[in-house]
Amino acid sequence: MSDMFPIERSSLYLTHLAEEQELAKLKWIESEKAGYDIGIYRARWLWLTRHRAAWVSGQRHQNRGAQS
Image (cartoon, rainbow, N blue to C red):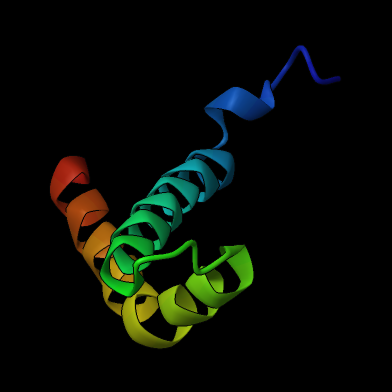
């Protein structure tokens, strides 16, 4: 069945990959500011509490524009 709908084309999977890229960027930026590696758990907490809601909203807006 996986041949019928490869996960690589799933919008959920592609959104997950995009979010992970944003998380990696945030981790790098915040680690540079702190002067040490803040770690993935701290970076994920920062992402969830400070940035994810706006990012998701932007993704939805961007997807609506692409569909029009």
